[in-house]
Amino acid sequence: MSPQGAHRLVIVLGDQLSLQNPALQAADPARDTVWMCECLAEGNKVWSHKARIAVFLSAMRHFADQLRESGWRVHYLPLGSHTHDTLDDALAATLSEMAVDGLRMTEAGEYDIQQALDACASARGLPLEVHADTHFLCTRDAFSQWLEGRKQPRMEHFYRRMRQQTGLLMEGKEPAGGQWNFDADNRDSFGRDGPGTLPAPLSFAPDACTQQVIKDVERHFPDHPGSLEHFDWPVTAKQAEAALEDFITHRLPRFGQFQDAMWTGEPWLFHARLSCALNLKLLDPMRACADAEAAWRDGHAPIAAVEGFIRQILGWREYVRGLYWARMPDYRDENALEAQQPLPAFFWNGQTGMACLSDTLDGTLRYGYAHHIQRLMVTGLYALLLGVQPRAINDWYLAIYVDAVEWVELPNVIGMSQWADGGVMASKPYVASGKYIDRMSNYCRNCRYRPDQATGPKACPFTSLYWDFLDRHEDRYAGHPRLKMQINNLRRKSSEARAAIRDAAAAHRQDPGAA
Image 1 (tube, rainbow, N blue to C red):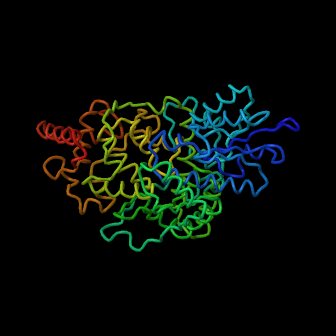
Image 2 (cartoon, one colour):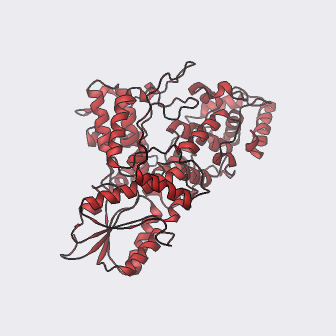
Image 3 (tube, rainbow, N blue to C red):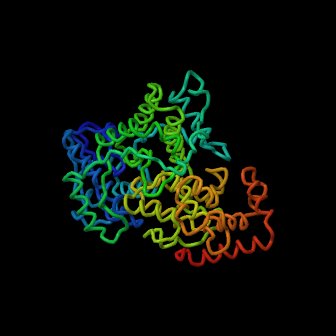
């Protein structure tokens, strides 16, 4: 705690928007001042989608108002009120004008921001009190202890430990339903008839504060990608809780069964749209998991759906955060497959004849959103098969999605999607041909390309690149227990067929925008 009478500046970052923020909990509204800042650099260090910038700024401004209503003094620096590009420069300027005895913050979610703020405090000779982030259900220290000595730290093992520690979906010492993981029950497609009438997710019309944010974003970031025409994201804790209730009531029962399915023109389907609220700390993860578990125990939703939802939060979300801090700062530059292809320009405008990519990118640019299977098995799969430089596709994901914060986005891209860490996170690359996309969607039905063809004028680029990927990495994966069958299928092809595949892939790689 601060010495009696000391005045501290409490730093609240844009993804720490909870009254349960440990730095706020340790502070005294009668003495301390909250410091919040909007900086151009936060929207420009990657070419951020306008909706991504807007959701951060709107949530920050609403939270600052909530703090003031709760009796806090808030020193808030909006865009246009200062000329400092970075948070640490803006903080240094504030400290030169304001007499404080020290700084207090909750640990930053992003490695570079924490480094910069540490250096700023040190340069001013001020103590910086850093609190562990209690929003997460596993501390960084606890994850490091779990990680120690594990050459292959698999999420499934971590997830089971977290289930035991939290008691979520447990019956005594045994998992509810008799098994830990119901993933095999959650892989259905919609079939030829499609998803039918879908329950539209709860939307939130921009209030006066958000309308001003939208104007500010258009003024300060006019050339950035994406649209703000459809902006309706939750930007307060109250809205986030309403979005959770809406998901559990209307979409959770069918979420599990169809969580990997895709359909043209349907960006939401049965997905939750809660990741942004979770990542900004507008929604408590334990609350989300507990409410979902209650829906199962009340008979409202099947256990496969509830377990799949809880696994994404309690398992993946906590796991990738732990890996991020364990492997930074080198993690973002890992490139185990030595991929060097530039990111195709159509990722920024959606102009491609590949129907699956066209639909996914159209929704991404329109809303700043795509659900997890579109990210992993459409945009991510294509980048992996094409051989895009991992840092380039990583920066695109960080820029383009409203829920993208580096601690969660980077491991999912570098480790899971692109296998750039060489198997630390995922035991094998998520590679598949166009047939997978055909099985899980209707994208191929009206596409100019045929998913079962790897060569010829109608060859699907995914299929050509899939076989080429196996061909290029044959020696690496020949003995891999989970890829050996695919390599053996490759080896059954004639030398002439393999050469034709290499030529088709090379032609596409030379000009991917022509597809």
